[in-house]
Length: 151
Image (cartoon, rainbow, N blue to C red; front, side):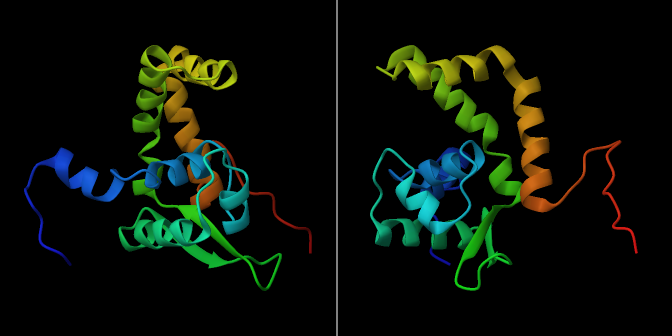
């Protein structure tokens, strides 16, 4: 592991998340429901290059923010999942969206999404995180149960 420049929590976070693409990949997984390489590559407006996406996915796996598994629906596909560390970035993404809507020329559609995040606040973010835990980690919310198949 490479040596840290400082012990500052902001600097340490930026060393993982502070490039142009890493949070965009997390955003697309958390807010866009994208979990396959092809979806992450083609459905994002920003136009990430395939080699850059592969590099960012590797970085995120190395730092434990996502995992990769074989997709049971297709032998040649992998499915990426957020880990708890990745899911806990939802409030960071929400705050960035709120700030960007306030101070930058966001598109009307995406500004509306940011406004929803702002209006919903931490309660909405917590609900989003619970849903991501269900989808990405297989966790069930309290009071929910898995249906059993009849034998």
